[in-house]
Length: 370
Image 1 (cartoon, rainbow, N blue to C red):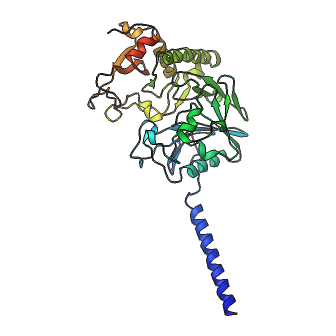
Image 2 (image 1 turned 180 degrees about the vertical axis):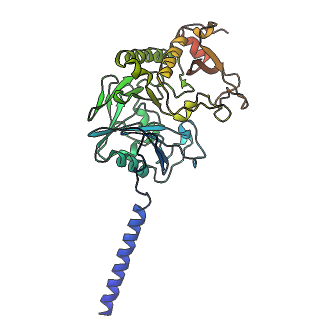
Image 3 (image 1 turned 60 degrees about the vertical axis):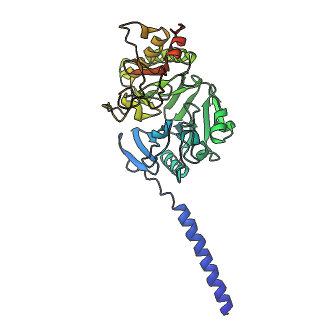
């Protein structure tokens, strides 16, 4: 009898231990509470992410974390977006890989990054089915792919993108992504919520802009840059941006009324760059800009086309070349600049392209002076 009692006590203790361990594990990620995201402009912090309500059923998520003390490129913050329609939800971009970290960008893993991101997205999407589409296949925009694999989610990528990067960057089979042709694919989320796609090459060969016309929103990733310039390494990339950004401007003129154009909000892949200030973000007078606009789209288009026409060589054209400095005390300081490197920003209005002079001359079909 005593022996049986001891067995029962031991069994109870083991069961309690298992229940405690399970509860402790489940409790690592606090439940996501969206109740404070009531009106447009509301924002909350949850784990590694800051979530903003930017429209009815539209949310911006930023993965910047003050605890991140290392990293380059996307480490200062990547913006992802969630659009909730009547039946479906569409997530645009997947930020940095904080599940495993990403050594080339010196990014370290973050505890519970995947669990936290899933809690936010599924919490906001509620019972809607989820689809995820990326603007382009760079490691700071497809980094959290693994967080949603094998969870009933459909992944989308433009057919112009190099899907092989997924395996090289994150050891993920590229076949998890379905491919679509930008400009032909639309996402009907139900309830009149439709997201159209538009191809803007340059930064990548399949860069996709997502257009939510009913709300007057464009989600551009890095296709047009984020304020202080889009990096283009070849003359062909500059020419592609000039051609496709002109098509985007024409599309907006044809499909948006003047009032709709003037009210457009352009949400980029790196909102911290919207200050227009170049790389020296600590020592400039910031412009308080939460999103970009129709003027920015036009200026980027004009900037790219002016480079193709060699207009920086013409006084009074409105296009100027600002070479980068290696001096941290200069406003045009670029931490990636190298002594003797003839690189900088081509600037027209608030449009800016980061190029070398050699690339600019190549884009214009001109011979660079020796």
